[in-house]
Length: 231
Ligand SMILES: [Mg+2]
Image (cartoon, rainbow, N blue to C red; front, side, top):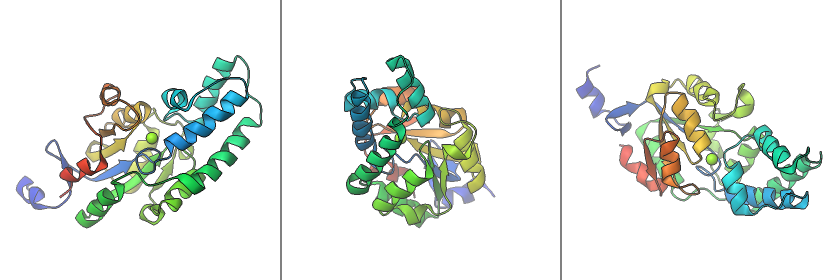
């Protein structure tokens, strides 16, 4: 097919490249969960003798897998945290997310535009499947991601390794070099960049410079800015 014919097709075009599809991070990109999760985590860490504010929790743990979070806690605490930490965290987060989580402002308009343009998309999260079902379910986004949800538990290594992005792209039939990724954490940006994908950073909780330093080709501060690339 000639490039002129390609150019007449609807789709996602960024920096002159037409993309096969889009992979979204979940927490902080589709759903506004990071402040809730960080507040719960900070409270529990404070309770086990590691005083932590929500802001510190966001700065230290954002985008990390749970095994990596526990490594950081163990190093800072100087000992292994109590076995009750994780069960309590999951229970408290689940309860808080079920009542508090909202969709990220503007994301529904972006997904509507992708649907209208016939562009495929999926979600790739370091979080567990159950957490995605909760947050996407509460926010009404779940049905948009049937058979399009990929978790770090599905692959060998979580972000910042490229494994999860490559796995999701392969399953969805996207060429990694023509996969656009939307991420809000430096670790997630790094993972997608390492996978050879083009990354747009959503700079809501993290300064845009940090996302660019991790490999983002562009940053937005409002999801609706993505609409200019969908036609
Ligand atoms: Mg995130």
